[in-house]
Image (cartoon, rainbow over all chains, first blue to last red; front, side, top):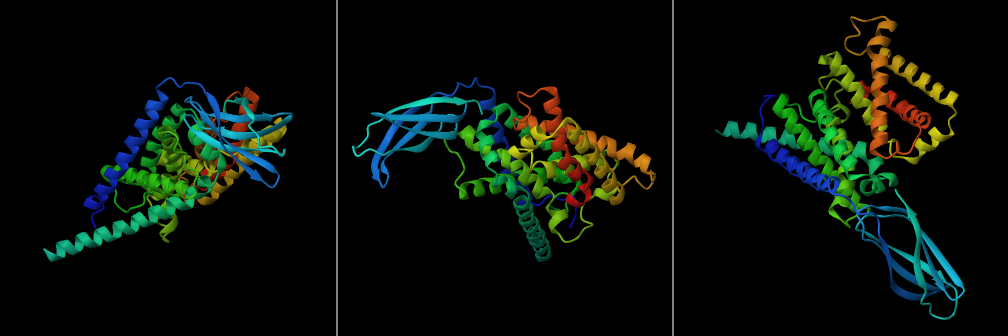
Length: 120
Length: 273
């Protein structure tokens, strides 16, 4: 085999490499050179279901900003009972699902709020 | 005509075998990173400009590695460039497949997903290019013996990256740096330099034939090699956000701690890449 020759298969694989490289550079460059909006978190209640320990409230935390939020603390309050949960990260333009647990007999409709977060 | 077709088929067969080895090398090197939680988060949490620079800065390193190691036996500028691109394709495919399989790929935005994959694809491509050296069963594979002095230093840099990349994103590196006293950090620095020198001298780097004295090897290889380890460690810390918000002393401790595995990798470059 000539060590300097280029086969068609090799060229095809290199074209695939070129496509993924330039695709990745394009996506990252457009993210790098646009001014990112800060993290902006909202909470929506997804489902409330009974469990052995009372009630589980499934919620969705959505980040409408471009930057990721880290160490996100979320609190729910229903009557006198408070429940909380922490998330390591919510990616920019992404969402995460979490659950809060309430021990009362009545089906809860908690007031939900984000306590705070930090930069990653 | 038939014999030409046979030669073409044989070459394609050999290239497919090389590709298989490249996937093996990519998996071997990148699996620890693909299964590291910090790397998943860094894919979308690290600043986009750093993720972009990491990918772009990796290109000359991958090209150099394609020249000195590479996953196919083909050589020359064009083949090295093609090997680099194919290694990146192998890296992207390996990283995407495994992140999807582990269900940790964040698809909330293209920048998140591409950031996660590209961060993992670079070390996987590094592994793909070192595959022939590591997986061929022939320890004489590769062009290291013909490496010039700058080539030897480049191989030390590649070895440092190859070894330290697996540790750079982990929280443990920061914790060790925080727990280390200034005297302890100096001790780590001294051990790094001594180990680097001992392994380099024992491994018999090219050029050492003319510079046989330990002092000459120390000046020619150990000192510049350790400087490369420090610089590459600092660069890795910056990419992974480990340098942010640190004072000079704390940053120095972080760099010295990461330069310890980097110097072991640099010293063992001949065995690794």
